[in-house]
Image (tube, rainbow over all chains, first blue to last red; front, top):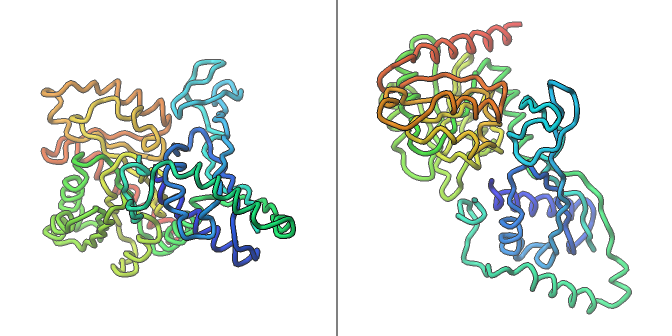
Length: 113
Length: 264
């Protein structure tokens, strides 16, 4: 997935919030990233400093909160853990599973001043 | 992945050598230099802001516009060379007298694809994304305004050839259509699961080449359904015309539905 685009979005969101919430510097950023969201945390980390250079988050630390993938089986109705989008239900083996969590890509917390 | 291959407007000339940890250290010294008084000013802000929120809101605006004007929009995605442009050219030849068709072409460089579409007599607008590897909803909004699309039209958006990044970017389309050619291998739905998960229709193209390649159709379909149990699948050959009418019929029916729902 497009980690650089996502980080550019993060920078824009920070700039908008800096205006509305009156802060000058971001000290750390917590991103909630679902395990099924196809975002590579390593790629995000790798590009972070470059994208934030010259911005109010230039010296910020990037933190992640990983959300595990989980689905609900259409067949047996039970919740089942998902590591990949195509995982089958661990209870009945069916692959008609609706994802209920794991696709998140959000900013959830900022430490600012 | 894109963060590594550099398909964005970002310059890669910056310092890249795992800068994150040094930055964290820099931050610490910056913090302690401020003294207690300013350190107290640090505060936490809780939020729930989607990283794709902005794109999604542009996509919703586009979708609303398309619905109001009876424009049926497909976002065609595939790896490079799967046959998206040929599929479109043949679709236009078959249907341009049935309803108005316009095309938005996304490529990193060149006008070649838009030129191929224009040769059919249909209007096409080429978006060159430069280093970016996908189209976004804002760009589509601008392109649609430039094109000035007639009511009750079919708008085909041919995305940048890439089975990864375009999966995440909603453009406001009715459906993502993933085109997979039999020369690419039958395991692509599992290898690039995000795209097949995001698509509503899979077109398996170049079926005229099946005798010459090691492609197991049943296996491919089973993999696609494993990722996306509700995906609709059409097997065809755009160049030879094999089973092409299944696709054009699907398009006709979809167009009729859109026009009907606008009339209501």
